[in-house]
Image (cartoon, rainbow, N blue to C red; front, side, top):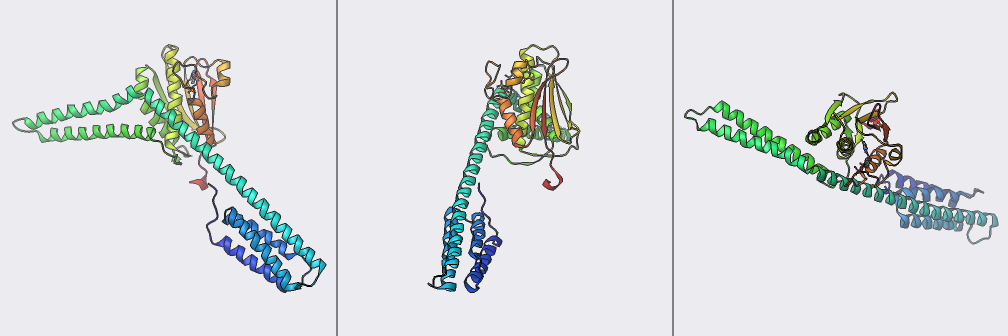
Length: 358
Ligand code: ADP
C-alpha cells in the first residue's frame, strides 16, 4: 500500500513554508518570482494527502499567488510583476499536475505489486496443500503412532493401578509417557495446520539449519517408506535469515520430496539425500539438497524452474517455480546442477540478516 506520511512534521513544515512565501511575496518588493517556491509546498503535499488533497493545495497556492500579487501591486499594471505572477502560476499548476500523475502511477504500481504478492502466496498455498495431499499416509501415521502409544501406556497404567497394591511410581511414568505422546501428536497437527492454513507470510529471523531439520523431520516417514537414507550436515550458530517459516519449510520439503521421488521412480540403488547448510565465502547462507538419483538431462536443466514443467505422471510442475519465486522475493536464489558422479544438486542461497535488520 502507498503510505502517506503520518507525522505532523511534514504538514507543519509545509504550512510554515506557505506562510513564509506568502509573507515575502505579498509584503516585499523583490523582483523575483518568489511564488514559484510554492512548488515545494505542492510536492510536500504528495507525501501527506491523496490526489484530491494535492489538487486542493495546488489551487490554494495559486490563490495565494494571485492574492499576494493584488496586495503588492493592486490592479495597477506592472508587466514585469504580472509576468512573474503568471510564471509562478504556471509552475505551480504544472507541478501539481505532474505530482498527481506521479502519485497515481506509484499507487498503481504498488497495487500491482501487492496483487502479485497475493497471487504468489495463494499459489504457494495451493501447492502446499497439494504436497500435504501427497503426504496424507505419512501424516496419518505420524498422528496415529503417538495415539497408539497413548493407548498402550494407558492400558499399562491401568494394570499397575489395578494391582492389589497399586505401583504408583509406574502409573506416574505411564501418565507421563501419555502426556508426552499427546504433545507429540498435537505438535504434528500444529505443523500441518500451519502449512494448510492460508495466511499472509510473516517475516521473522530464522535459523536455516533448524528449518531444514524440522522439514526433514516432517518427511522422515515418507523417506522411510521410499527407502531413502537421509544425511544431514546442519551446523548450529549460522546467521539468521529474515523469512516466513512456512514458506522456507515449503522450499525444503519440495526439494527433498523431489529428490526422493526422482530416485524412487528411477529405482536408484541405495538412494541417499544429503542436506547441508553453511555460509559461502561471500557470506551468503546456503542450503544444499543433493541426491544420487537420475539427475537432469541438459534439456531438463533449461526448463526445470518453468511453471508446469514436470516429468511426473501426476506432477503439477509448480514446485520449483514456486521455490524460485519464494527465494527471489527474499533476495535469494536457487540453482540446479549435475552432481558428480551421479545425481542432482539443488543449491539455495539466502542473504543473512545484516546487523541493523536484527
Ligand atoms: P513436480 O514435482 O510437480 O513435477 P517441480 O517443479 O517440483 O514439479 O519439479 C519439476 C521437475 O523437475 C520434476 O518433474 C522432475 O522431472 C525434475 N526434478 C526436480 N528435482 C529433481 C531431482 N532431484 N532429480 C531429478 N529430477 C528432478
